[in-house]
Amino acid sequence: MTHREFKAFVVEERDGTFIREIKSKSTSDLPEGDVLVKVYYSSLNYKDALSATGNKGVTKKYPHTPGIDAVGIVVTSKTDKFKIDDKVIVTSYDLGMNTSGGFGQYISVPEAWVVKLPKNLTMKEAMMFGTAGLTAGISVVRLFETVKPEDGQIAVSGATGGVGSLSVSILRKLGYSIAAITGKETAKAYLENLGAETIVLRKDFEAMDKKPLLRPLYAGGIDTVGGVILENIIKSINAMGVVTCCGNVASPKLDLTVYPFILKGVALIGIDSQNYPLDYRELVWDKLAKDWKPDHLADNCTEITLHELNEKINLMLDGKLKGRTVVNMQS
Image (cartoon, helix red, strand yellow):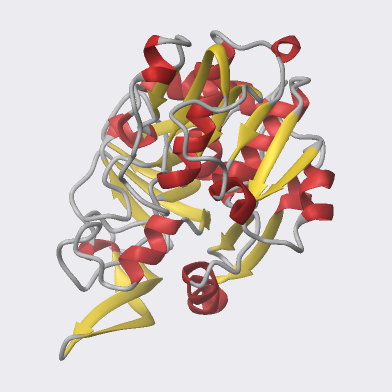
């Protein structure tokens, strides 16, 4: 096989410090895989930012190329399922964690990690969603199994982040009323434009009464941050309501009684998009490409080049990014 030279965003450890640089690599440097994909777009996620800082809980060995999302065109394939020139999406599993990821212009991955790009979705749109959109979509699927738009308002935490903002957009598309919880006091207009009807400041939501149960406010919730925010969402849910949780940036701990669960029948559902079954992934991607696609998807997205990635990682770590950041890997 002819080896190809390409550019990649590489994180290296030097004397205890983690350095980020764009380097030239070869496809011979990539792991053995069923499918070699030329990456056209990737996207920036919080897990990528952690990997870029040397977080050994995300990435064990360096040098490493992060990027848990990628979309592109198949260059070589050892499987009948994918043919040369197929447009494909690769998200989650070990991509960008301990397997060279989407911040490189080529990736080599197992067949099981790959999903064909739906016909109604462009490559750039796929990365406007990325793992964040997949996570939001799975959360909405699980919520929709029990809670319908007519049942009441849905609380969405971390609403300016990737998963939160896309959850707001998808829920609005489906006719739900949304209460967006955010730590950014300047985000009101942005969140209202996405479709949120109520804006709740994080500091106010965290300061709610510490009682085991609170006044019912919401029919359901999508939590992306954990900690006190998740506790108060659970305590504020209507009887038989559902809350999904997918993040722990605030805290992995919960200080709760069992009362919301045994007195009100509230259900708490964990969302693990990293290893979600392929059939469900294909279902969610199909919905995102069709009736769940927000009308103004691009309004929630900023496109950057590989050379701008380092700056955006720093902004993400400082909590200063809104919406989705798509990386044009061929610019």
